[in-house]
Image (cartoon, rainbow, N blue to C red; front, side, top):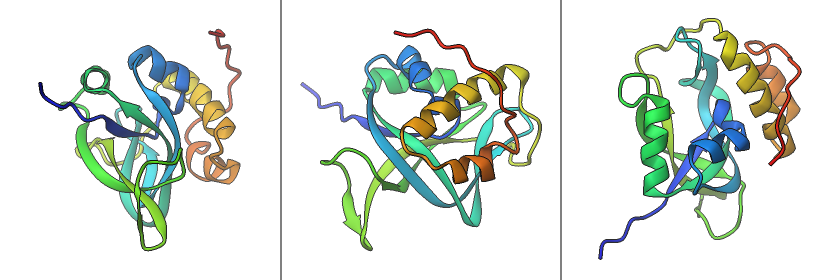
Length: 168
């Protein structure tokens, strides 16, 4: 019998939306928030969220624990390897206890992140992505990601739009 470890996933774009994550990855477990230092959130020329290295910037995300089956599903949704590649990065973790280790006075975890390494310049968002990102922003705010972060990084690219969400 082989052991399949769970993956901690750093969801920074439309996967900030918990409803979307449960639809894509039904076995996921939401754990909390995390911060990635020295990266910046953008909408790239494909019209979707991406993160790029950028000193003195930061990216906030929701962290989910994924089963191997859910990680495989998410790879398909994220278009691995054509649209995004998978990287594992250390992030400052603010979620449920029992995860991470203290490094330099911060609780850190190594998390999976999807990065588009080919399209790293900014562009306009796809029209359908604006709706999904507004739902994602609502969940991000509910889960404690600051309005200051949202206004500085996400709102310049994602206009406010009314969202209609079905309840579970």
